[in-house]
Image 1 (spheres, rainbow, N blue to C red):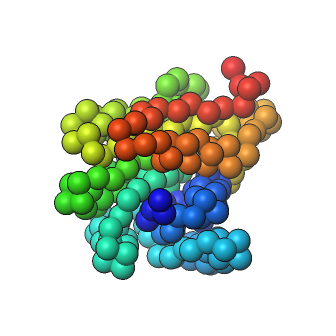
Image 2: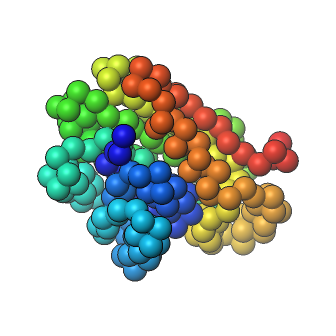
Length: 240
Ligand code: NDP
């Protein structure tokens, strides 16, 4: 069955790969992120492959903007079946560098952005009697490493929020956390701290394509209504 699937952070990396895969499978994707040109290019790629996509400029740190993103899709299509809360940033640094503004940005995008997505979609899912939340967390939701304390804290939070949501909502609403390992994307480009940037070069030497995560999301969405894939960890086989 074709679903209306909202994806935040759909302008690159995992969000973009997820949009392309799910659209190829016949779903209608609604793409949100800040870079409109990149969203438009993604929508063009979707349409060139025979799929259907809407584009809307979105900043997940703005609660009203996220609500408008979800409400507009519900109004246009009559329902919203899935929201993939994927938007995230990872400007890593050791705590002693005191890059407090970058800590705040990770908290705003990775935690508040997720909460805004839940707040926007949950009333629709409750009214419809069904829906599916997908959170793109991280392997950083399961282990902490130097330079990644704040990033991991945001991903532990994303994991906890999503697990709490799963326990609280009606079983007609499904909840999935996907935790990627090292995936090819633009994620490390936001690192400004020189030591963290250098460390990431080695850590990120072995990657898997973003479509590997998209395939996991597709698997979770394709299960029958009574089956909830709660969690997937997908990482390069070589990643320890
Ligand atoms: P990218 O940097 O390629 O993608 C991040 C996406 O988030 C972009 O589309 C970006 O779009 C969007 N984004 C950032 N800030 C905002 C904002 N304020 N509002 C709306 N959208 C925003 O990285 P990935 O694809 O790798 O990241 C996707 C998710 O996967 C993130 O949550 C990340 O933490 C997680 N992850 C990635 C891993 C990896 O190795 N790649 C490993 C583990 C987890 P724009 O700039 O246009 O707004």
